[in-house]
Image 1: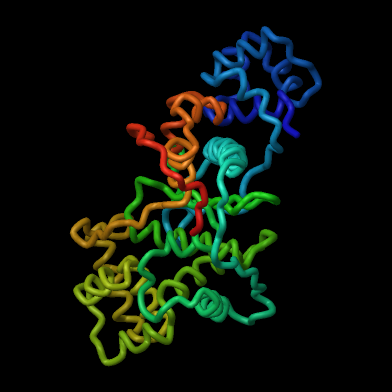
Image 2: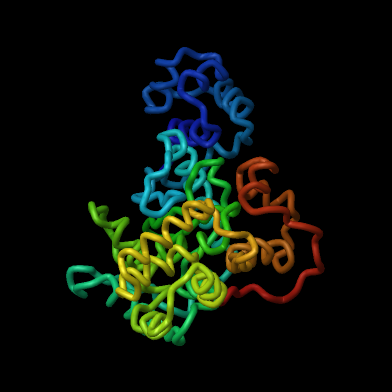
Length: 360
């Protein structure tokens, strides 16, 4: 059960404030704020009011009774194979947002019947022997047809995974997963990133949910291997590359078909020994020289499959259950700007329709 001190820390992290800056805004000494956050000093009504103003949050925010959780086990940074700069402040802000979203999920799901149609498997790498075998098992379990996965977002939602979009407060983060007892797994993806990166990120986060209950030294590489094998099954890619000369033009054509980056395809070609080391080195040099490591040609972009379940849950409150937009914001216990940042504009209200169940 969250205390005022817990929620004060969440509010401070959400705004990206240091303890010193927050103490100045609250008009208290930094050691005093530290003791308040650690529940060593009880807050009075005046301090609660000042906290509401300092962090631009309604007083009701500081009455949320949910558990406050620590940082996620994994934060998927922007560049595969290279650590991007994600500061402790970034992680604190993202963790605060995740806690708020979990609270919202609980409140939203109290009013709708959300029924996944597929099961999310939990498979151990040591038992199955290889990540590639696990990826193939998940595809088979979900009866995924051969070839490219058409809509990965929808596939994950059908297994009870809530997918949402975030700006991650400007951090170099592509995605993050938050799984806690009693709530559906939550995966957030960076709304500002291109679709090829987001599809790999989604598959990477799916790998964590399937394979990892506890952090390990190899979990990030295993999640990358899962993403590659899940989106690009090796036995199918082997036939694609067989007898073909792998060029940038060929990779570009495959990108639009398989809906993954050229770099993911090139790494798959290397893994399958479909090209020599010298050929791979030349292609990587060409990709780097063109500046495609961080952003492949926009002309090759394809539409990303946006989340559908979370928007449907929110729309059902307004269109089916008769909530006013202002009531939704009040239910969320955050301000209008925060609600819009998290969920977008709710748009004009429509006449109620008799649809309350959300079945993926």
